[in-house]
Image 1 (tube, helix red, strand yellow):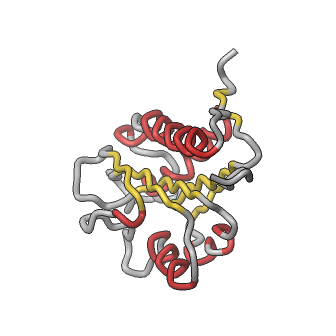
Image 2 (cartoon, rainbow, N blue to C red):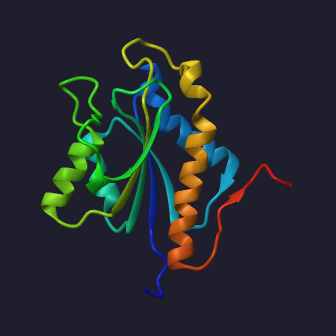
Length: 172
């Protein structure tokens, strides 16, 4: 255990113009709106940056990715797994032309160390039609995804810092 505070990145991925594909970004927006995080935790809207995210990962000890993935389950099914334990049935790509976060992490791993990475993802219903609103099935699961992100952050801080410093800013 180190005396320094670990840098934790919470990264929301997705295209907000393709309905449920933007769920990761929507979760980040709500986390920023409803919670206060200590200075060692950075919330990032990664959008569709792909390989452009490599520099953002520099110096991070922990990475929590929030995203939509194709897991061939019912829409709204939520997944939580470590990057190295990612099930083979999971795919991030919705188009064969996309360079996604999983490819970015694989490249980063080949170039050097990657942060300890947890992925919190959801099976989308609609990622092929234009629209900035999530489908109701996915919108209704955002609180569950937020709870998983907060649990993950608290587990990291409890193990490494012995404190729980994430606070809900809507609670008096």
